Image (cartoon, rainbow over all chains, first blue to last red; front, top):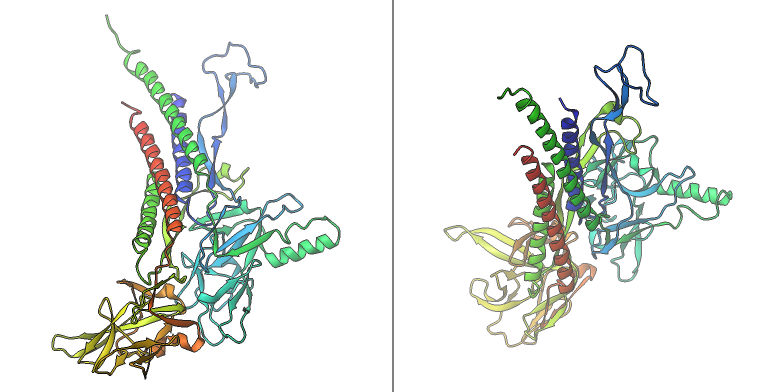
Length: 322
Length: 278
């Protein structure tokens, strides 16, 4: 059978998946903290193709010719597939919501010594017992800072993940006297949790159990696996480090004179009452969709043309007419 | 084609966000209305393994192709910001300045007239009127849905007078009638996490109490912490801001259009696939 038939079919299938990735980007255009995916297409493995029943012809330059075997024409790969969808972790725009339980994460961390990208994430986890610290395996990472306080007073995401502090504990906005502080919660630009004093004689802010949002520095964030619902799981080597650790390291390196400008300290911030919007560019996405559509159409044309060739082989070659 | 499902999930979610915004706009002039803001959330992602041997090398991300499957409306959260004051000079109009809710109640009875307990609701709507009630033995304050305003014990606020010529409520909730103190105090209750309240329509929130519970067992009075004050002769307007809602509307409409466009493109692709063999 003519190879091209399957080649163009594989092209159509790969483009269909690319369309899915684009449609998902567009669907999540208003999802806080969403990071857009870019589809990567990859050719099938190359294979050598050779002439058949033709030992006589000239050898092709640069191609091996083995005695007794058909001469090789060259390399060919017979298809394409979508091998990966790479999330782009670029910072999204921030927008004000005025809700106390919304936090936008801003970061501009500089790459590490090896030039690896570094990004800041909130740590969240699903916990059976929220009074215990989360196990490292259970911790997930997200940029979606649109939260709410559940009936037990815990800060949770829209999908029920507990938001963790820097000790990997779930954050409970309940004061010492059992009063719910959900409407008085304050998160400062360093991610420290506080609440407004209700005592008119002692106004001001009171630290909430010395807790701070569990911000994690993820080096080479492409090693994160997208689980959906805005959640990422770490699959690379080692573990993402906490912001405190990374910042202390940065300060030490700075003091030792390894570099002059801090790479982490002062390059991040949390903003309460704001959300980070999706970093999807609608114009680019729709343009990509149009080019996907046309490429899909072109592949279909090739398929139809090959079908025409086959039709000739099937119906015309064998015909005996007068 | 999965992309059709992805885009239609987006249309559904956006439609729901539009409903929320439309409801906010519809209640622009509703006394004591609190707006809801919508927040989207991603759906789960599918993982596919394509060519495992080849996929193991030369990649940027861990093995497998992960594609998201759309979006849903994740949260609609209550925005408890204070609304503006509207001066009405009607003595029975009350406005809460600060944190708290009025607790209103209604008696539930069976067919024979025996009491089955009370139904408690929270509201920020302070438009009440005086009504003479022989059952209660005096005047009571009633809202537009027929619920009685309660005092700080959770019982209907009662004015045991023959006639009411002058009605005054102090900023800390004490009621005086015809120049005499009644020692009745309006109950303004603090709800720590209003997001957990169930909205039951008519500008009311279910207080989540059964008929025989005392509100003091579940909630605390705003008077204790001094977070609220009452203003007589004024009403609280809704906290919906036209500009915010309109820009949200534009945002929603454009997102809807973009996703409808994505569906059209997917549809065209399906048409192309159909015409492979014409």
